[in-house]
Amino acid sequence: MTWLITGGAGYIGAHVAHAMAEAGERVVVLDEMSSGVPGRLPAAIPVVRGSIADRELVDRTLAEHAVTGVVHLAAKKQVGESVERPLHYYRENVHGLTLLLEAVVAAGVKRFLFSSSAAVYGVPDAELIGETAPTAPINPYGETKLAGEWLVRAAGRAHGMATACLRYFNVAGAARPELADTGVFNIIPMFFDRITRGEAPRIFGADYPTPDGTCVRDYIHVADVADAHLAVARRLAGQDGPGDLTVNIGRGEGVSVRELAALVAEVTGATAEPVVEARRPGDAAKAVASVELITKELGWTASYGVREMVESAWEGWCLRHPGARPAR
Image 1: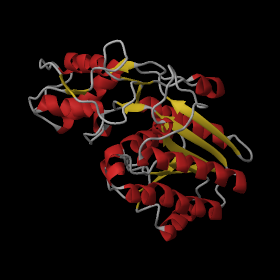
Image 2: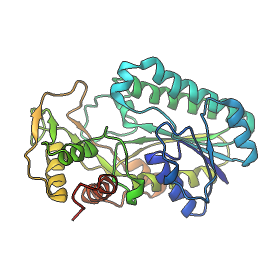
Image 3: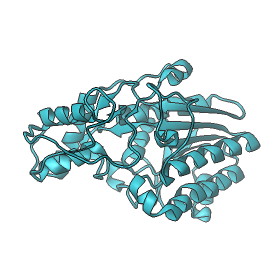
């Protein structure tokens, strides 16, 4: 098997590329580098710079590298931006995926793994969210991920592809400092950013129906996410004919925002108490994955805890912000 990883120079994509290559899989990366970092990838992994919307480039890449499977991670992924620019998100995430699938079908590729999101569930009303829970996304980003799942499954059924959709929960941490998230859009980097600037971390809403009033989330180490991709890719490689596997990628354990803030303070040495601000629209009180299905199907479970996520993320943050205090 040779796997094409779209978006493979991004935060999650680079972890997936490293994990698969280190496990002996042949991989090639396609990334336009709008948010990717070429230095995240070793020289041994071929990198093609360009967009999934460039049909000629995709056709050539699939042929030249004799690609037999695709791991599709390239996408726009900021919820707030998706609300402001829905047409852009549908063009990039849905139209781009359509063009990629057309090229994949034309090339006779029979394995396709799609990076989806827990955002497809919207605001769930469940202690643990299983894969059969209603899908009712509340923002254009989540809508594009759900539409992407529909496209992937439909193409698989029509063209004899084995497909998989992986619904990530809250991804955090780093397998090594140089692979850490460079954005400040997720909660842990947002905490780090405020701490580094000498400001108090912010908590959005403390009046939710949860034990301490703050939102509860399922955090999953990015190294575990990468390992899950490897396990699913190998499942697809051994599968003959069409069929879809849709699974949650999480730990199945909830952590409140206030608990996370306390752990961040412990790891970084920060002393400022978090400030509570107004709720953000659309935030669910609780969103924790049921991980029974992936355990049943693949025998896969997460290996890392939340402290390891925070410590590894802080090491990566300190690498890029020399003035920050090193992890303890």
